Amino acid sequence: MDRFIIEHSRDLSGTITVSGAKNAILPIMAASLLAPGKSVLNNVPNLIDLRTMAHLLRVIGARVEYDDGYMSIDSKDVCYPEAPYELVSKMRASIYVLGPLLARLGKARVSFPGGCAIGTRPVDMHLQALEALGANIEIENGYIAATAKQLHGADIYFKKSSVGATINTLMAAVFAKGTTHLHNAAMEPEVDTTIDFLCKMGAKISGKSTTSITIEGIKDLFPVQMDMIPDRIEAGTFMIAGALSHNPITVCNCRPDHLLPLIDKLRESGCEVDVQETSITVIPAKKIKPTNIITLPHPGFPTDLQAQFTVLMCLADGVSFVEDTIFPDRFMHVAELNRLQADIQVNRNVARINGVPNLGGAEVMATDLRASAALVLAGMVAEGTTTVSRIYHIDRGYDRIEEKLNKIGAKIRREKV
Ligand code: UD1
Image (cartoon, rainbow, N blue to C red; front, side):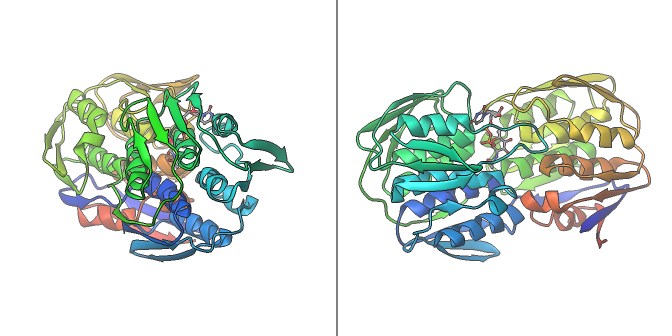
């Protein structure tokens, strides 16, 4: 198991580049099961979660080639519609194969995903939507068994905005007979780009970037090639690294239109943010101002940047409040940040952060993907040395984060334990 040894390094400067978006590539990999033949994805980073998904697609019968930057998925021979427990328990996004397998093969058996470090995460809305499309769903021995001779169009209202349920339903509905309307659909960029991919394959979908999406059922899709969008959460993590630094840093290959809530909050905290077409320069504040955030569905502030923004507020000149309305239990990083001499109390889903002048190095443990990114940021600003263990969490979603940060002045060493 690897760990990071991080020395105090607040003098970052220069340019850092963002990789392709994990949370967009995962559903797009699943969507490629819908079109027999070879689809090609470009701008694909080297991530454990993507390797896990590639493994799952191979188990299902697809041929997957995955090299740094590139992935091809040939789903001609897809025939084994099962996502086993070993893979789903490693990565919840495996649930994304449910919709496409049901649409293409008329059946799917997917292990029920459990909770995770950021709380209980039900899939009830995925299942209700598939049932509305005419699927028969049974839960047996910890597995979701879904069957359907022919899915049909339906009017589906989601009680909550859900990225996963919206995308799974979209993928299932492309071959449904008739028209499907999704109401209160999620509008995250990862939903939009999955719609772009499906439409490129021949699907008929309208209402992108709104909460009302319409899908006209069709008979066939064909394989395509597409560039993956940049990862807004990786970009946001680097922007916050810039806000914590003493010098400006420029985040390249990003989509500023996907990062508006963070840009707004960084400005509110006193940073200057210079936005260009595909890059953002963050000029740090002389004194960080306390700033409150509430996580919300897109275009609100993303829950996946909550832990990292909390690190910035640890050093603010006053008290800030961070409320997570998406995953109310997502505060595992707080106890670790307090080990680094932060001053944070959590009450229900709200963290009260009393800014301190400095953090101090210590040994801490990564508990989930975004929490570990927060600990890396905190380790960089803490005086002395910080050791972050269990960094396999960070390798799930960030492609060689220490190499990227070291290039702009961080001092992070990966060590095998
Ligand atoms: C995705 C992202 C995750 C991000 C989250 C919110 C991937 C692989 N993961 O997760 O990084 O934090 O969006 O932006 O893309 N819910 C239900 N029932 C359901 C489904 C969801 O109650 O059937 C609830 C969840 O518990 C949560 C809210 O809906 O409170 C939003 O979750 P959702 O958008 O579905 O998150 P994921 O797609 O799992």
